[in-house]
Picture 1 (tube, rainbow, N blue to C red):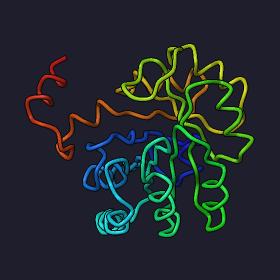
Picture 2: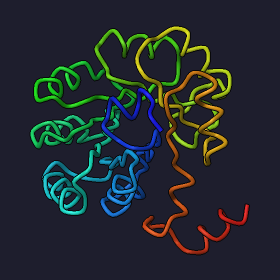
Picture 3: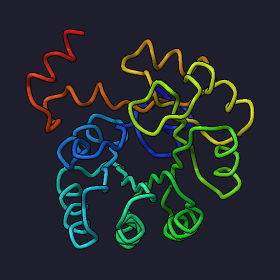
Length: 213
């Protein structure tokens, strides 16, 4: 399936692995990338000294595009982003902070940047700053969601910005992807669904409960 998301990031399927702390680790990131999606490593639990080795590990597991998520609100985030930029990671995904400097640095080596936002105002700001896409997080998401459900937020923001939208929050299968595309998004981000995969470092009992829901 071709969408603006697949064309922008050079992937086969318009599906992104959400950058989940302690879950979106190299093995899962590479598995998603090798399957044609966009694997996103979460760096919140890592130090800058660890980041270079982690990026090298991901590259040893896949030759497909992947990304690094940095939540700028947290300690070490700026330094982790600088390491990712220095290693020329193909895609940087930033959240909870001003990322214009990340966009500028990534574009210098041909990298792409996704800004995670939860409001129309922040979506428009990310577009002005030069972000290549936004991950639009609805109330349905487990992480940094806003106050508006995805089914309302996605069509609203799609009418306000021109860059690709990756819808996040409440999406877990092909039906959800079809719905997101119909609402004006260019792909989806999934977190909980990927937690239930073989490659995710999550207890088997949790996976079984999730799969039976």
